[in-house]
Amino acid sequence: MNRIDRYLLRELWLNFAATLAVLLMISLSGLLADLLSRIARGKVPASLLLSQLGLRLVDILPLMLPLALFIAAMMAISRLYRDSEMAVLAAAGVGPRRLLRSLLGLVLPVALVVGAASLWLAPAALRLSKDMIDTANKSLLVAGLEPGRFVELPGRHSVVYLADMSPDGSEFERLFVASERDGRIDIVTAESGELYAEALGEERYLGLSSGFRVEGALGQDDFRMMRFARNDIRVPDSEPSAMGSSERRDVLAELWQQRTPGAVAELHWRIGAPLAALLLGLIALPMARQPPRAARYGRLLLALLIYLVYLNFLLIGRSGLESGWVPGMLGLWWVHLPFAVLAAALLWSQVRPYRVARP
Image 1 (tube, helix red, strand yellow):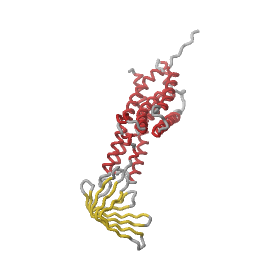
Image 2 (cartoon, rainbow, N blue to C red):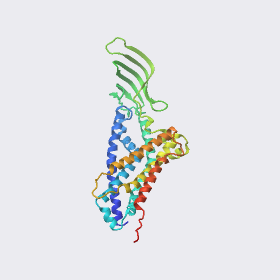
Image 3 (cartoon, one colour):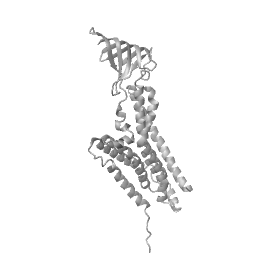
Image 4 (cartoon, helix red, strand yellow):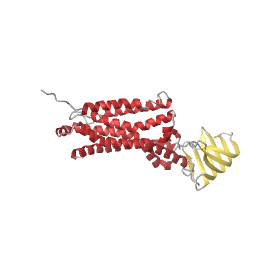
């Protein structure tokens, strides 16, 4: 590469890094708020905040990187036109074809990263996230309970006290639980117990042995007292599997062999992410062309609109594949094809050779 190519690549990559950093900060704030809400409702153990934040960030990379690429390419190229640098480069023999070659030096590596994240990294992050939550929810220690302390269970309006606990946090001795709802109190004591999950692994229960239960309304004399040999109390819901369907957690080879509508929709969704990054990067070159001294962010709103239209059509197509009203053979190609035609037409209108009329 000569000096001009290095200059163009540097401008593209610097804009991409800055745009990605801004999008990452915005996404991190949203993910953090969502995780804190789940922790407050008892759906995610508080000790897994940072790990879950990182894994969720990997999951949204296939959506974030194409947008960062599209915005960065448009801002970098439009600045060249706006500051009349493209006019100087054209006088030196550097035209749209040379600029396209430099743009591919950004688009192709980013598309490869998007493909790796969409096909392998994001599903692996979802699997690891759910496995970590399932493992953590099997321990009372991670759930926030400690021996010798009164602990409030989030989302249950209950206070729990444990006198002793096993090292792995799965068994306990001498338990006290007090809860209040709608003016009624419910007090449960037990000599011993354990924490276990149901067969599907989405609900957690405290299995209590040899205890008493007192229930009644405050200020009234209708209290009931029961003695039990075994009593199960549901603790706050664990993180549901809605974070990713079973198809989202399947590896690529398994998706390829399956024929269910959900597997077909997930497979086309994963393949579509790098293809969308490539098409958006190519569309950015002709769309960024503008006259000198134009508004700095004049085309940014148009870029966001194109990305949102593309993304919404992909989401509609994925939903149609899952529900069955879009044929599996059609997949999401009907969404990518118009944008591929648009990219080819716009690029050809800008880089096609012009014939000089002879006198």
